[in-house]
Length: 321
Image 1 (cartoon, rainbow, N blue to C red):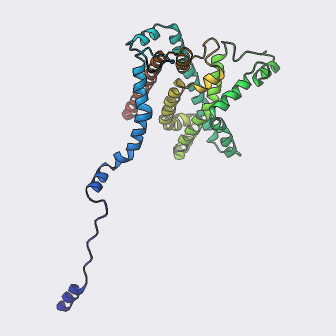
Image 2: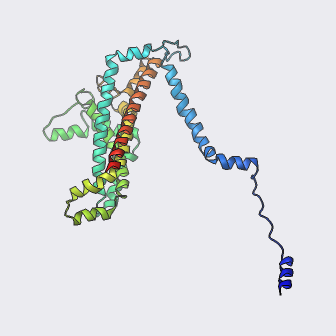
Image 3: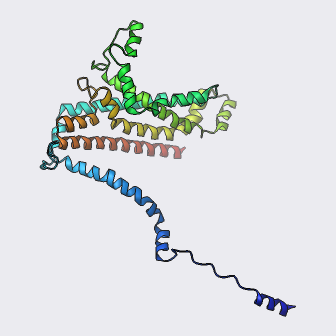
């Protein structure tokens, strides 16, 4: 019996060893070890060409007296452009304008967007249609949105002046009166950005455990107390990120301000980015415009640093609980 079993095993053909896949040599080992870097390589090249190189070129340009009519003939002036800007009242006015515009835009867009997300997170008839309608401002192109608000602010035919006149509040020069210039561009920006905040916060609300909220209701908590105890802590990470993004985007926002007011009236909407455009293409001073852009970059970096400091403080407080 053992002999027959041995003979049968000898007669049975052995399975052939698995073939080595193609590319299993030096190239295959290289791909296996560095596959992640190969996938990242196109993105790195893109960022290097379209972000890092222009950034370095702009910083070098800020140390020159380059004019628009002769962009290749600028002479080096060291930190002269920065000294001029830091001693210029017009520059500091544009910084204050940028900060005010950013503050109002972020506060109202994040506040209204979060409130809208909370409202649309509740169940009611027609909620899907309302959600779709609420996203329209974000889908409208920026140029079209600016033209819409230019028509709304029109002195004679604009719907805003018609409304204020009907209410007995008189008519106002929304785009020519310095008193209303910042309000005009802020309102348009908030209208454009609020739907994005609402969508982001609405997606964050979907991750809040319903069981925890129901447990607080069983314990006798009101809906507001339940929101503070359960919902708000879950929303805070998303809220901090969207606030940071909105802040950076507001600091560097150009198109909607320029299309509505052009930086006027009387420079009340002349933010840093609009100031860069005016300095470069109206004053034809590319070196000084590059210096304004560099200082604007520093402002954005400061905001980012403050965000990460606050993030670390929040994490430490949560770990100590």
